[in-house]
Image (cartoon, protein in one colour):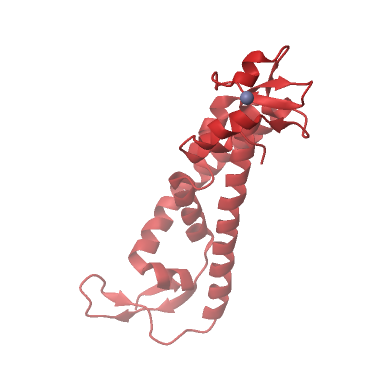
Length: 202
Ligand SMILES: [Zn+2]
């Protein structure tokens, strides 16, 4: 008699793949969580470009973060113990019972809830990394006209002609200040999402 835990997510993912993910997740998730928390805490204290680049790689919609969330969901998922049935399938000797065992509905609720939280974590951390990227970027601020220019765009004619521009980081700029029209046009042409996001306040 072989006993294994059975859950809604395990049914969807498949027993072997699920067990494999869970095994990896046990080793990797604690370390990855510590790294992410450390980065997050550092981002509260400092406004450094390299932290922003690291957040860009490790959070939001990046593949690393999506894999992390999948691992975390599987790790936190809990099944109920069932007796496996012998099978003639090529890849597995045992399968889960065909009839839904008692308590299976609870695993559906738990699984679906975890997936919803996972999506929320991806969206929220994506917003956060974009917001932080703006905070770390340097701009040339025109206090007289309450606008800011991109420091990296040296083709802006308005910035060239303006006097007394102050170099400031995104988080230091007043909320009411707007991005310069020409710099915005230029930023919109920036190809990847990271570059186009870090020029605007989110
Ligand atoms: Zn400009």
